[in-house]
Amino acid sequence: MTALSALIRRDIRIALRVGGGALIGVLFFLTVVVLMPFAVGPDLALLSRLGPAILWLGALLASLLTLDRLFMADHEDGSLDLITMSQTPLELACAAKALAHWLAAGLPLIVATPVLGLLLNLDMVATSAVALTLLAGTPALTFTGMIGAALAVTLHRGGLLMAVLVLPLSIPVLIFGVAASQAVIVGPMTFGAPFSILCALSLVSLVVGPFAAAASLRHGLD
Amino acid sequence: MSLIDLANPTRFLALTARVLPWLAAATVIMLAIGLYQSANAPDDYQQGATVKIMFIHVPNAWLSMFVWAVMSIASLGTLVWRHPLADVAAKAAAPIGAAFTFLALLTGSLWGRPMWGTYWEWDARLTSVLILFLMYLGLMALWRAVDDPSRAARAAAVLTLVGAINLPIIKFSVDWWNTLHQPASVMRIGGSALDKSFLIPLLVMAIAFTLLFVTLHLAAMRNEILRRRVRSLQMMQASRAAFSSEAGSGSRGQNASNEVGAA
Image 1: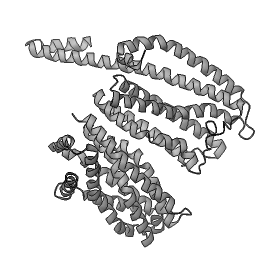
Image 2: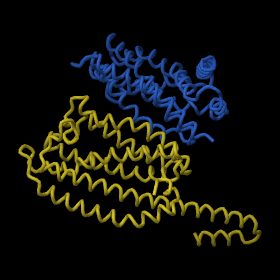
Image 3: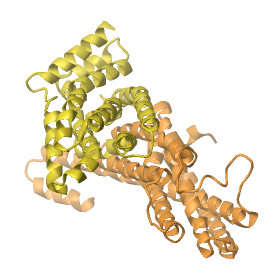
Image 4: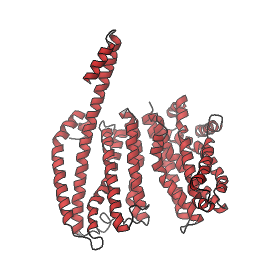
């Protein structure tokens, strides 16, 4: 347990310090959201209708782009080999790393959501609905994305290949995240059903992600 | 003859060389019977002649999931049993599965246009099959991105097993959500809802398509084995050429051009 908490604290500290690049994700998120009004036009009614989708898409891309840091830096300086060989089960270590990554890179996205909601003309209720769905959904993005990050580090290929592999897996999260937010703002649907499915997706990925990533690291690293 | 006997690629090649003509013949015969029966099947009282698209569409859709299941078993073979031909099987199946999935989507949208009034609808069944198609393409991209086959095999195996979660979602999507796509009517509790005049041609077509997949898959596996042999021979030749040109002092360019000509 102490080993895992030490791992989490170390990862967060590395991510937040100079060269860590956790907060670049937030900057990217901001930039993508600011780009959208230029693409669709500064029509406030349209923006408030598209708002949840824009925020979700921005958060999805931002969390995807920060993912390849998850194992890459540790692989380069050799600490990934130490983690693989240590007494702690690799599945737990992977889960701890993903949790640390989510705390450092995913949580700031959710904190930034209210500010970005203002830019997109979302009211209080809509913004908090989007923030809540992001809080429930971004762990799923991180934990499924971890599979892609593990594959990328074993194959020495990052970037586009990882995006192509991870994005299909994150489509369900996007569908139910946006559906739950829209249900609050306009929809005839209830908020509960899509939100529960979103939570279920996060919980499933919490189990599947570490096992798949650990299997990939164990078979792939040499 | 167990699976482990086939671990020797030479034995596998010899066996498939004998089996493949028979399989191909059986596929042609079944396809001929199935197409004849489907052409003679009566028109539907609501859908008219367009119901005949079903005899192509449904086997393709079944096969699109069946191929991923085959790839998942092959991936277990790679990761758990380390069967030497498992990754060959997984690699060879991916493009075939992608083709079946694409045909299922294509025939489905051609059928949807007259029946639903739209080529495409973002309902659960269609979306999950589209995700399956994207995952096939991603897997093929993964195979192409890495030049060392055994390294690519293990990564692809992990990804295939993760993607297998999608299979039950596709199967049950029509029950879990209210979709435009109709719920299951052939394999369901309480017997098939299809009339015999439709069911029998459909089953014949399903068997024909499965035979087609097995034939194509074995042929693709043979090609993959031969391709790997050619590759390792070329690597050996290249390293021999590099070695001899390092050893030989004067005629380096001469040697290299000889080797290239021989390859």
